Image 1 (cartoon, rainbow over the protein chains, first blue to last red):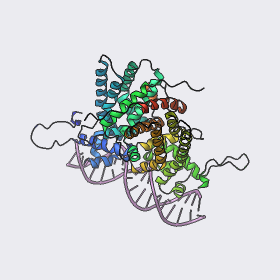
Image 2: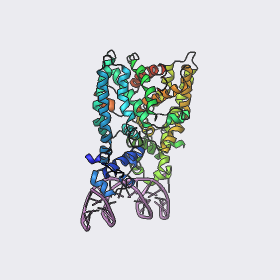
Image 3: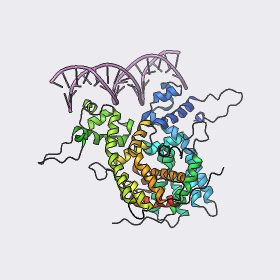
Image 4: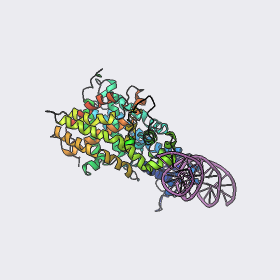
Length: 228
Length: 228
DNA sequence: GTCTATAGCTGGATAGAC
DNA sequence: GTCTATCCAGCTATAGAC
């Protein structure tokens, strides 16, 4: 799998890196799946955009599902690891703040891809799309990639908010994921409504507004009981 | 178009209502588009599930796009109208509260379909899926349906939060849409993470937790300036 | 309005040469 | 590992009889 790595530095000389076939297919597939969704793009299209024959794609990945799974895992693993690392850092602090926990959870997800050679936010869009697809396949991919770091974050939140009932905390974590996913989806709705004044694609700006908003929500008094 | 109406009361007798072909196609299409997405379901599948010939479907709707557009508009119009009605009611009040405005915006969207003969939340899922698709067609459908009522809500929010800067308000409205859309998507993530303790499909429960959470977020002090 | 039949493509996946 | 060639199922949309 090591030749999948797209970040290999050429040994010497000015020759272009000549990305491997696998790396080209992964980069192109990520782009196209993000733009058009699982069913919106064919492996033929991906192969031809990556300048690879259809048969070669099938040789490397077999089923279409495998291609998506490998694309997803390649990006998701570093995100989940960075999350774990940041959460551990925050919790090693003498007095961890709610804001720091939220930032540690959100930042790796929102900035993923930004510093890569690809367009940035491409993976974020792909992830947002999968998050709203109810099919078992999409759910398993997301679950495998992010359940551990999500549980870790819920535990950290409970620690900085010891008085918040667990059920309330779960709902609020659900709302947190909603703001994160919708920001990653970059659906264009808010730009359209505000004439472009507010751009969820601007990650630093999004985090600067998102963290205080969520922190206030998490600190709100718990909801009352059902009217019954 | 009047025979599209699925709520016609039979004139007399115990005969089953015998829904029109159009009504059957709209109901079935809504269900299948919501479950599988725009590209995940063919008009053949819809026609056969509705017990209608493929040619009949094409006679009534022509392009596949028209079918989705009619399905969407049929549900979206009442939602947008109810929103407008509730917002007007709230604003006619001597001292409108932030909570009341949020409830007026969210309730029609989240409860749509709940009282219908279909599974409820079917339309909500469809809407959530379209909201994360970047294609122009999906965006136009959503924009046509909901831009007016969204703008109306932003104005109402500005009125109950006169000191909040406009840019901050726009970001927070974006976050509000995120929590709404993700709740409508009912992705199963939070159920999986909490062992089913928290269910976004339970609309009353969702609203009871969502409104205080968002209200606290909207009332937070505005975010600081960029670090620059 | 509804049907059967079909045109004309595109889809995922494979065979077999090199 | 990569290619050309191919299978065949499925797709949207239309034609034309009734």
